[in-house]
Length: 467
Image (cartoon, rainbow, N blue to C red; front, top):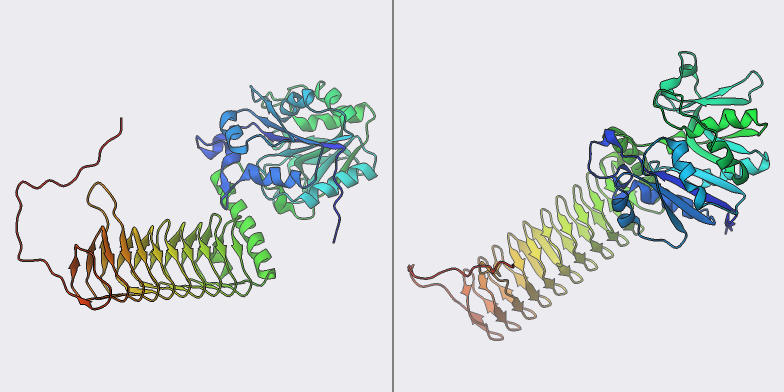
């Protein structure tokens, strides 16, 4: 087992103050989700894995929303950048909360693909070289949009030029800055106070500490990122989708290495918080969302959707089924074309068939609801058989009522159970029955409405509106 040493002489500065205009959204950019998790959550988790002395999180636009989302972790300090005047200005706002450390690691809040191992590599390279400033660089397939690393004839970094300020020759440089730096604490803020805003955007750029530091005789080093996809910063919805694709490939690859078969992985969506057991097969087009948990030896799909579901071992969720905030016991079968709505709870070996909908109901072990039925607000016992077209009529227009069905009950096809109603153990209900009264244990019960009548003065119950 590899022991990871905490970097308790390091403090991290996370830049998350930008509005993200190109996202065209009222939601702060760093809160946009990537596979069900805000991009800022990814970067905070990544830097927390370093076990630094503390984290300074710089917010500005909609900082109240960001703070409400993140909460108040013990090792996190909130820093407000009231005016977004550039990355250098943002880091300078941290001067009051960063102290008594060897180095400061500066990262961006919109880089969800960044790995903690890459940051450890940067910090280690920075300390080995005894540099005052070390920049993390990369060689992406296209350098468009990134600051270029300008070096002299001896290969030493002389400056970092932003895309909008680069001339024709500089824009041809393949090596770019990731925007991630490790800087000696006793150097950082002295240099930041000397940064000026003589550029196209009239902003205070963090990269300008490089030429200023060189003039002061401060050593500037670099460390190259092995996988340039980690540097992807998200500025618009297209880049958000690109980050999701990259993250999805990473997640699927990890599950494949843990014994999960994923067919046509390019068509499958598995969100960050999902957990999957070994020997499970995820068929094409399926989506596992939220905090879904899948047990061992399951078969999901094709084209099944499970959102915040709990699926026990040896379960089959057949094509085009939808499970939403519901649980399924061992060796059960759901679908095809079935729907489990919130608070549906299936025990072991339950069969839910095609075009069956279950809502806020418990279905006991071994029971079957195989065809074209709706079960809502119900408790169904063990070893029951619910015939095709059966409906629990649970809603009177204002209130929901419960149906209770005992063990080993057989409900004939096209039966309507008008809740509240109870069916006793071992009862058999004839096909086409309309039940308005409780059914006794055992025997056969037959019930049907009389001839059609009209009650002119009857009024349906109405909901009472609050306030």
